[in-house]
Length: 182
Image (cartoon, rainbow, N blue to C red; front, side, top):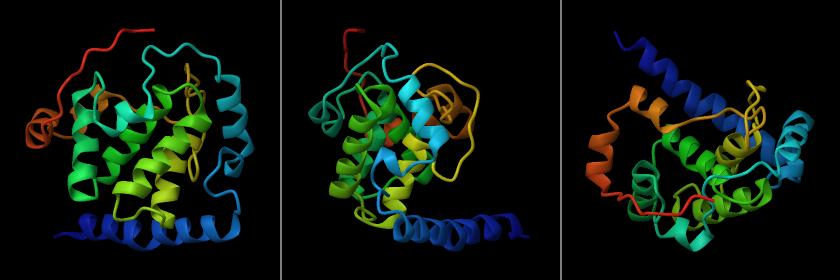
């Protein structure tokens, strides 16, 4: 009856955990852009100077003060509970890439926030979660787009198709803060 749920759990608890442990054990740059695959380094570098619509400082991100109520709610959940759903961590980290001036800054901030607030901070799962989102670790190249290059893209509308975004935002209280577009 629950075979699909059991399979998903095993994938996360065993397979992904082993991949994360091995990635960090065998790659001494597990927390740096240089630790990514060549295709990812190349695509991030190619899109380094793409115009960003919004730019945020680390403090604004840490304080959940962006124009995106879903992202703010995820950050609030991280700070209050020490975790967020894996799907939301992907969205959360990818938006940091979209809203900072470089991939290096995005990874630094994502790891800082994850290490400071998450129960899996300074753990292979945390490192690989951020590296997957920003650097495409354990992923393939996707259709090329601004800022992300061939790194998998996620957006608010996609989240709305996956789960009840208004209910999540209501639960964690993320607000929309105005920010001038760049």
